[in-house]
Amino acid sequence: MFLQYIGTEGSGSSNADLRNIFRIGRGTNDLYKKRDVKAIRSLRDRYYKWPTSEERAETAERIRQKYGFPNCCGMGHGTLNPLAFEPQTVDAPDYSGRKYGYSLSTLVVNDDRKRIIYYLAGWPGSAHDNRIFRNSQLFQKPSEFFSSTQYLLGDSAFGCRPFMVSAYKKPQGATIPRDQEMFNTALARPRVMSEHTIGIWKGRFPWLKSIRMPITEDKKSLRNILQIMDATVILHNYLIERGDTIP
Image (cartoon, helix red, strand yellow):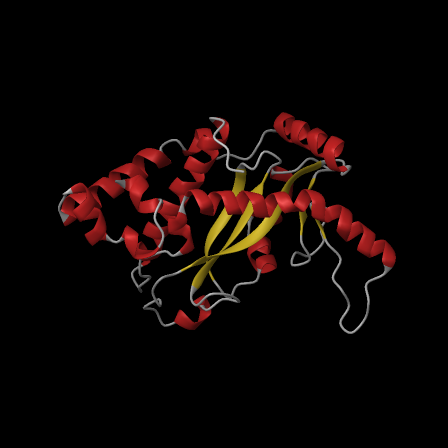
């Protein structure tokens, strides 16, 4: 029942449809979802974790051999998770993002095997990717996540830091210098793995493309969304480790 719920986009994941498919009552439907989320999240420490120094070194070596970037241990990217309903909060306009209508903005960091090794969700859709990154533990406590020469790759939305190598921004009303353009072209090859990872994550769990849970002034409403999102991240990594691939 829970897989049907997170595997369906739009109204097909409504409680009424699930009750009709599985011939269960509203209370049973809600109870099953809560139990499943709790059970899946109990596997969090096994399937969602920041890699050890040895694992980061192995990732960096694979990326160096394939793309030529030394000491890179992952890629960072921002994405929007659309909301099906307008938030019932005083700050509802903040959830109006750059795309869609209302949405949540999420930072996703993946390795070269398309595992999600870090994410930060729950920000309103209008929040800039770099703002979310600056408020992450990666940014605030980099020594706990990176060795001295290790870094992530990101697009031009991110500010350049010793632990975040981002693409050059095109100057307004001017052309980008040739050497910077060549660097951006080289950077695009490994960085596209971020979009692949997010595409697979959302492709596996279409619930993420239209979250049909209202956000209210009750903090539990957003927390319930984030807990289900957490379960999808754990399942995504579980399937990666099981060898289940999506082209």
